[in-house]
Amino acid sequence: MKNIFDAPFIREMRAVTANMYRLGWDERNGGNISYMLDENEVAEYLDLNSVIRTIPTGFDAKELIGKIFIVTGTGKYFKNIDSDPENNLGIIRIAGDGTTAELLWGYSDGGRFTSELPAHLMSHISRLSVNPENRIIMHCHPDNTLAMTQVHEMDERKLTRTLWKQMTESIVVFPDGIGVLPWMVCGTNEIGKATAEKMKKYRLVVWTLHGIYGAGKDMDETFGLIETVEKAAIQYMLTAHLPKVNTITDDNLRALAKAFNLDYRKDFLD
Ligand code: 13P
Ligand code: ZN
Image 1: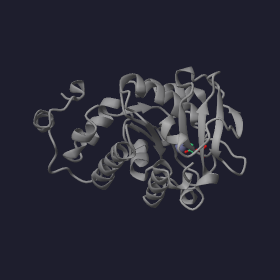
Image 2 (image 1 turned 90 degrees about the vertical axis):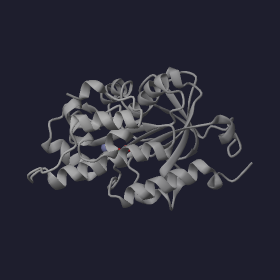
Image 3 (image 1 turned 135 degrees about the horizontal axis):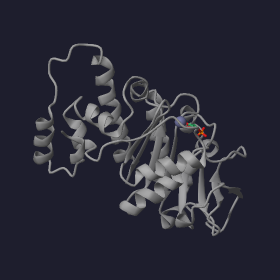
């Protein structure tokens, strides 16, 4: 059996959470990540017949029975993951009943997975239904995206258009646009279901006055999506109160879509 601390998925979780913390996206215990792992790869590091304990999830994820995820712990700080991954992360497998998580590694102080597990697992189900390659769901609280939810209309078409017009790369990176949820109580099955519904159409979902969710096939894609939204939101927050002299027009966006052969939300343009 190989040493789990050498596993690429542990290294990736340590690196990305440290990076997100340094960017200010994950204050205190803010944010959470779930990453679907390959069973054969996990078996190189863990005895898959050895379950440390079982934890009820409180919802049915039968589409994910047998699937294994590495998930950040609830109440745990991204700041601390790199120095103590075994306490702040856990590897869980969805048991045969679809409603129980089998802990295979981690949460070493008796902890459990993020309170946002409903939004994560339900979003995995949605994304896998449109893209079987999807592996990551990432949630965080980036400053400018969050600030925008206080001052911008929270309408999917309007928010996406504004962000597309902040910088040329926006429509290239997220041509599918951004889903929006109104303010809701977090950590519930209700916000999980609402997020997953949006995830059938979008890889990005903004939670008003809370943060953002991203989905992708790997850490780079998922992180890159959120990073690009946040960059566009920075442009907006830096300039929203100033007279606009130059803007990206709808025709400019159409030209980008043509040049990059984008499958984009055409109904989001005038
Ligand atoms: P957890 O500590 O349970 O992951 O919650 C953090 C958070 O961002 C809630 O939305
Ligand atoms: Zn949050």
